[in-house]
Length: 228
Image (cartoon, rainbow, N blue to C red; front, side, top):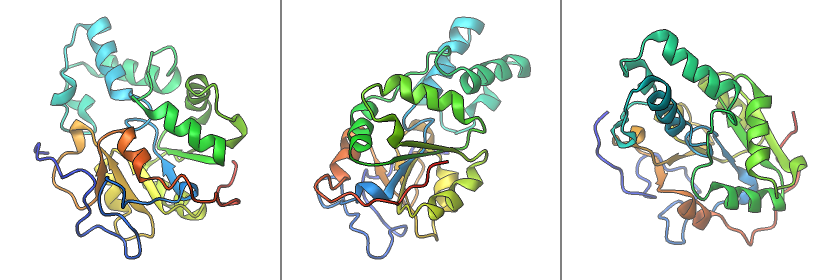
């Protein structure tokens, strides 16, 4: 991928008919009951944790802003066993791996959880470890409002979102966004160094911009999310 950055919040050919996605200054209005979230790279600062473990335990220095591929760990120079060790720790023990929340995520997500159900859809296969991580970092949120679905594969996220009536999905992996391009779900790219190639999707540069897109005054719809 090259490093050309798409103008934040602008929608081009990927816009969905009938949506109000125009920019991040106030015309982008999302019903809070119709948006769901990826976890790693959007809520959990997972890639930074990988970098920190790689340096601390293996002496490998990786600069965060130099990551230009989602699966960057395949080409770091680390041997396969070391790479798998880091990935296993991140997947199985996110708290012990010291993964921290992305700046601004906790406040926005807690506010959403306090108003209705909050849906996360992750490609992780294990639900409990990352759900415990979310509970740990969102202690003020209502636990019974937090729903996390472990899809197991990136390709399986869209059917889950459609089943639950979601219209927007915040995601950092461009390949997943393209899977949704012709669907009723509008992907919103959460800006990261690895997704800055030219693409047709709306982008947000952090949680403050994302919060500005949400119509906080809109009455919350019930029954949109299904507990699993």
